[in-house]
Each structure stands twice: as C-alpha cells, then as structure tokens.
Amino acid sequence: MLRHEVHRKVHAIAATGALMLDPVAIEAITADDGPGTPRYENVRRDLIAIRDANRRQDAWVDRVYILRPARGASGALEYAVETDPGPAPKNHGHDLYKVDGHPLTIGLDGLHKLDNQLADFEVGYDNGFAPIYDRSGRLIGELGVKLGWAPATILGNVWQFMLPPFAFTIVLALLVAAIVSRQVTRPLYRLRGTIEEIGMGYLDVIADLHGPVEFREMAKSVNAMSAGLRERETIKQAFSGYLSRQVLDLIVREGKLPELKGERRHITVMFADIRNFTSIAESISPEEVVGLLGEFFERMIEVIIRNQGRIDKFLGDGVMVVFGAPLADPRQEEHAVIAAVEMQRELHALCSRWESQGRPSFRMGIGINSGHAVVGNIGSRAHMEYTAIGDTVNLAARLQTASKEIDAEIVVGEPTQAAVRTLFQWLPLGDIHVRGRVSPIEIFGVATSRG
Image (cartoon, rainbow, N blue to C red; front, side, top):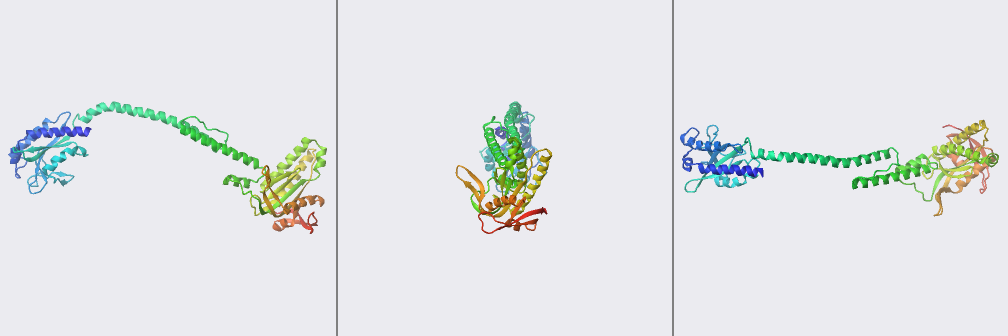
C-alpha cells in the first residue's frame, strides 16, 4: 500500500511536469546539443524548476530527465536532457537509457505502458514517467522523475502512527507467550521430574494428572509405565528366591519368559535333606525349629542361586534343585557339584555357630544325578508348576537317601561324575542297588574341590 502511494505521488509529479514543458524546445535539441549549449540548457532550466518545486518535506525529487528515441538504434531510448547530466556524451550526443546495465529497447510506447506496472517492482515504485506530446498529439518523449529520501516521507509519517500499536502488539505477544510458556513448562518439568524418579528406581511415584489435555494423556501413559515396572519388579522379587540371577536378568532383558512347554532335555538334579531333623524338632520349640530352618535355607538358597541352580520345590526339611532348566547350562554338572560342596561348607559354619550358642545342629545329605528328563508345566489348569520328572530325578532322590545309608555327605551319580571327572578329586563309593533298577549304580563322593 505504501509503495503504491509513493508511486502515485511520483507519477503525479511527472504528469504535472510534462504539461509544463515546451515540446517545440524539446524537438529542437539535436545530437550536437549537450550540456552548455543554449537549446539544451533552456530545457534543462525547466527540468530543474520541476525538480526544485517538488523538493518538499513529504516528497523529495532526486532527478528529472527526458527520454526520447535513440537515433540509429531501433527501439532504444536515450537521455535527451537531464537535471544532473553525467560525463561527455558518447552515443549520438547522449547516453542510452539502461536498466541493469542493458539498453532499454521497448520504445516510448513500451515505456509508457510499463509505467503503470513500475509500482510492482522492488526498485520501480519510486520512479514515474509521463508522456510528452507535440502539438499534433504525437508522442515525442517521456518525462522521468525519481524520488529520493525526503526529510519527512509517507513512510516516516506512517511509522509515527504505526510504532505505538506495533510496540504494544510486541509487548502483548511477549506477555501471552510467557503465560502460555509457563502453562506448558510447569507440567512438562513436573512430568520430567516424575520420569527421572522412575529412572532412579522410585516406582511408587505418580505423575500429576492436572494441566493441558496433552500432558494429562502423557501423564496417564507414564503412570501406566510405572505400574508395569512395579509389576515386573514384584514378579522379579517373587521369583528371586527360585530362579538364578542369570535367568531373571534374561527374563527382564527380553521381556518374556523362557519357553515353558514340556520338553525332553539334559539336566542335573540335586536333592538335599536334613538328617534326623524330626527327632531334633521334637526336642525344641516350634519357634526354634522355624528359626533354624530359616537360617539354614537362607544360606543354602544363596549358594544354589549363585551357582545358577533353580529351586524346584521344598520338601519339608529338604529341597529339590534343577540345573540346566529352564535355561540351558553347558556347565550344569560343574555348577551342581560346586553348589553341593559350598552348601556343606556353609552348613558346617552354621553348626559351629549354633553349638557355641547352645543350639542343636544337624547334618545334611546331598544326592546329584544327570541325564535326560521331561521339564515343563506339570499339573492342571487350576494349578501348574514348572518341574522335572523322569528316571534322572528319581535316581537323584535315591542317591540322597543312599548318602545316609553309607554315611556320606555328597553322593554323585556316574553320569555327573563322568562330565566333570577332571575338575574334582573323587572318592569311589562303590556300587549300590536302588529300588526300581536291576543293575547296580556306581556312585562317587567329592573329596576336595580344585576350583
């Protein structure tokens, strides 16, 4: 709008000035006329008068000039007279009119039509042209006017009125932005704080459900995530006494349980049982019985889990442990024997402490066997448990029973001993007959551990 207003003004100045010029004097200028010649200076004085009359506070004319067809150049225009002529003329006595360094070759008619579009050009809105006709109405030239920066232009006047509302708009926008930003950042920082607490392990925190709807939805998602993590942590803690840390870490890392369908696989089974515990329990109070068993199983379970064993079930004062299921363990026989040795060592330390406290102590027999068994969910839809069944399991239980008969702390079956023969020092215990088998079973005791 401002550009169009400026162009309208410069066009009006050009149109008014064109009416003040003498077309006869303009046509009288020849190629030989230049600055200093009478005919040239006569017209130039008229241009200077137009220029000076329009150097006001609201419009400042920079220069005024007359364009006419260039002699010898079709369609080209040249400067006939200027208020501020340049150096000595070179083309037919006058310089060619150029745009961006190139001669304008659209003729007077083209320039006259172009004048109506100058306001659309970046550098054209402050230029204006008006036709110069002779007395017969023939177009003989164009009066060009170019505005300069006036002391008080339209732009300057407009800015005086625009600056206060513009400044008010900026201040208002900043104020609104600050309020909106505060409404957004507050719930965002609260949500970030909640997520950071969850990341540090505080799974009981609850995200604030106040604020914009987007943050409420995000807070609901964070709360759902926290609830899921709490559930996983509860499950992990519930199974920590039954599964090794390696199994738990795998379940948590992969986000799914190992395959629990029934399958036949190679496992190592350990049975451990307290000897003559019934008679011991009859001689002490129930509270003492529970205390002794609690200390005993706490030490034993720690050893079992450390050696990648899985508590299958508790059998009164005994326990059944499986190595190699549900996760395969290529060193299952080694881990089972090491666990048995460490369990006996822990029990000896416990008994020494109990005896010094005047409390009863006891011994433990362990049987270990390796082989194939069926592992998976056993039971019904109402109640299932993951366990192992088969002859390998039964034989391990028989070996634990045999440990009492031959007075050995650890009895290892031949399949287990063969797998780790070079890792331990063995005590041959001969052959035994077990119920359900025709042939005798070769068994071994562990003398010392080399690891």
